[in-house]
Length: 368
Image 1 (cartoon, one colour):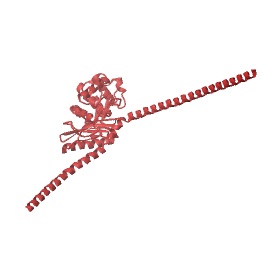
Image 2 (tube, rainbow, N blue to C red; image 1 turned 135 degrees about the vertical axis):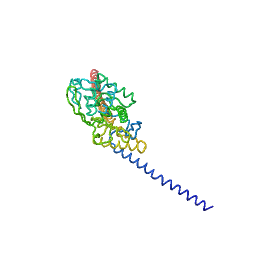
Image 3 (cartoon, rainbow, N blue to C red; image 1 turned 90 degrees about the vertical axis):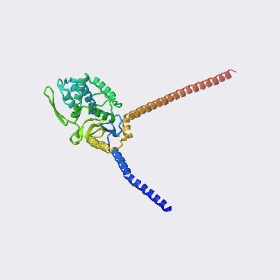
């Protein structure tokens, strides 16, 4: 009986050891992936980033996905979507005087040039030409302001709750913002159109205006020359927005979308985009869980200007209080001086009265 019990205990120990040994590799694998995700989060210098599975819209990786930031020229992707839905690419439009004055990045169209909508799309998406974006806006809606209204209506229809536009090209201004999550969704929507896929994947293009002016366009997306899996993308940069990028890549019938906002430099932008493309395909291949990070420092950045303004206003309040205090002290001094003078007058009156009484006494005494 004791021997049988002993064998049972040994068998139970063996089973437990076997389970522990089998679970160690899984545990180590999970720890490795967690550490890899954390190190990747530390490596991403962009203020906001999202990796999305194109087929499902599932987030595969994210850093501050809902942080509202300036979109810069990634705005032109929404401009292109509206053009695809509201214009005939073969039609021509005339370049107005207003368009030639748009700055700073321009394709170089001249007033009166007759240009096809397709040519303008190439200029806007390859060279990130602001004059081309405004020309597209005017061709579709009659004016840029009317076109912006269409852009914002489209954003609402697409469910982009953290996106708002104030122009067709992406130059900064109050009230223009998007998020990496919304930007990834804009790219996902744009990929529906084969023509847009073709344009954003073109490295260089030579286009002609109907007047015979030849334009050479080179894509601002450097990854087209180094990343074999890349379908295409759209870059953006302003001082306020820093470096921005949204792209799509395809590998073994799987497509991932990467959106980056607020990267400190172009070289960092390209490196991080490549890392995130690789990360996206790895998550899909291994059926891993999504990793989402939120960093307080990047959220605090948005409040820096507000904070500095508040600080300034507090200083103004303090200085005004100081002025009031000084005024009060000055008034007190004046009142104190006045009261001193008044007391002096009373004293002199009292002395005079005493002198008068004494004089009267002496006079009366002399009379008696």
